[in-house]
Length: 203
Image (cartoon, rainbow, N blue to C red; front, side):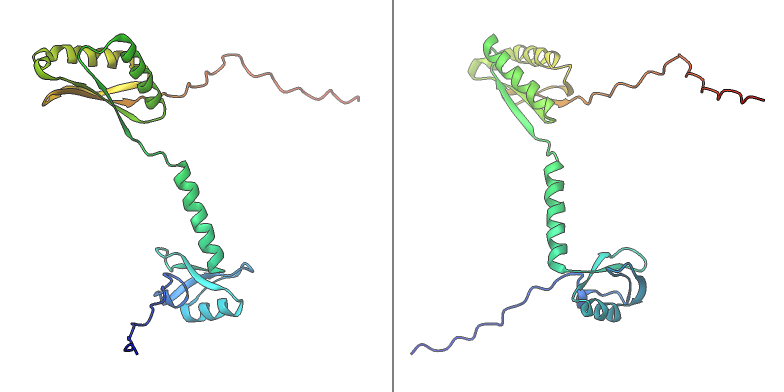
């Protein structure tokens, strides 16, 4: 026979800001029937449990804190749904790198320029890099001119962050998307038509 092993008791996950985990002495309790009352926390918990619900702290920074009687599982589902919707709407700005050589041909240049335009329109930043190999480092001016040309071609959709910088064996520049202002509505000089007056009543 194998010797018995003593396992530590399984810890139950403590629900934060729910029922007995609420530390505030009193809360502004909101119940499904529309009743809102400031009461001692233990009394609010008992009343919520009598309704078959949990007391959940929904606004801990309020004075006094606001707690709502509701089903914990349903509340948790709604919170996850809201978080998921917020992440869908949130746009994470990324830095897209495009690498060139000092003697990049026109076809490759146009291909990468079109990619950069798409990246900027999507709201991302673009880092254009010109890499030098071997003796090419003696012609850094070619890389600078290429980046200046690249920035000029993207002027309608992107703005350069500073001047091109030489680091090691590469020249680079960062371009950020340009936020276009919405056109303002022009005010019309034509006066609004006067309101029609009701016909005079016969004497």
